[in-house]
Image (cartoon, rainbow, N blue to C red; front, side):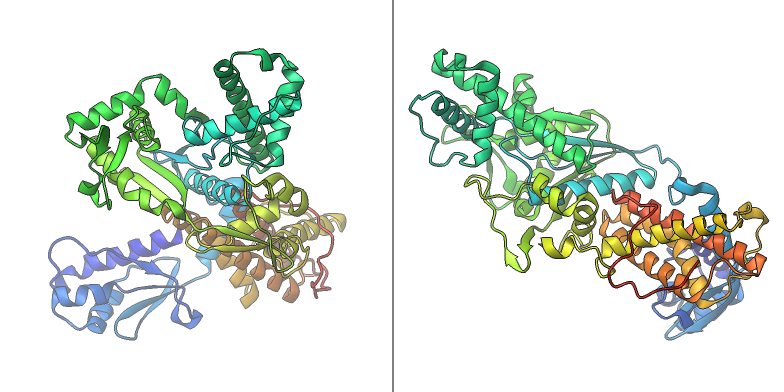
Length: 564
């Protein structure tokens, strides 16, 4: 990756200039950034400003010394000292050409790092099996899935896990709601609990159970009937959730049920472990966790006075289960309403004897659904919801995923169905996909004219000299660094931004530069540039879980009539 190569050149200069600067001890960290203005170079570093006080010399003077000791390298054209002491680095086109060759040679593997030998678990969605997934779950799903994708690309060994809260009060209410609809189906008087689930899907679940058993469950003892209906109803909803996620291109390596933690005794053992560590105590007939010892606003109940474990007790057992599997990093994807749970979960990790820094919580803001500017209200219990399946029917997987990944996790999203499904150049997902399809069309057009791609190593890339061409080359070269950045920051939205920038640079190149010309060397260079851009767009879209089509109809708002 070019940033690492440039940083190493600066480190070599620091080592060579240490005596002249009077620099003792460890070298400072070298941070490489991309200047906002192109005239400030390809890359810049502020290492001289960071080092000036330590060596007792003005920052610009330090920068001049470092610049004078930069080693000769084929990628480095020159260095300039600017402002209070920034060192701006101007590169030759050699690095851009090297990056293009790498992209074309590696294809789908371009932008993927070597394996790190480190394991990470990403746990996400984890919606209770009490109803179908809706748009709120969708954002959790795509964030978790994309984080898993980029961490895999960055070299981590990733396990994707879904944790079902299939125990507790909400499941009891769900079971009672389905049971009431089942009994009503056979003329037995029954009422859905006031705080139960009233959506139409509850009747669908009850109907599916009736189709399987007829009225046989009506004659069972009440406790046995309730248990059977809860078990079968939650299994039906779970199957529906899995099918929806598969359709949404979200797949898991493992599904873990909360009930397994209870039935195996893991919850009891986790609570006892907290007692032994001095972080659990009894009061008012209940067992409490000393959450205030870890920054929480109050202590939290582990075992209620009636003997029933809380969700948090199961969360503690789940932590033990995760750590026992040897992961180097545990990532939870939670809605912003769980912000208050972060301190207690990390506190539980420390109380159980683990490093809380291994536990990482990615919080995301919520989605507000609109249709043509009008708010769409949702309530799972009232039944007035737009399910994720219904949204996918209308909008499609690609547009839904890209839109939900187009903002930082910290930012809420206003998702307007009518805008998101517009197939136009001002819709980001189609704008990016159209770039990929347009490149495929260029390559087909060239082949139809008998102009095939020669091996990249045989092609002279020096003719790629216009600003539009060099801009596109830079974008292709940036991809590996952008992937690592998205992984390190757990910020897949940065790749959605990058995809739009990459597509914009290609569309500009397409508009300004005819690819297939009478100049054979220029044609080959531009075909290779198009092929590299196609690889880059496809790989970024793939990490976002979005398809890269080979063909698309002309989009509304496309002013270009340039040929290949």
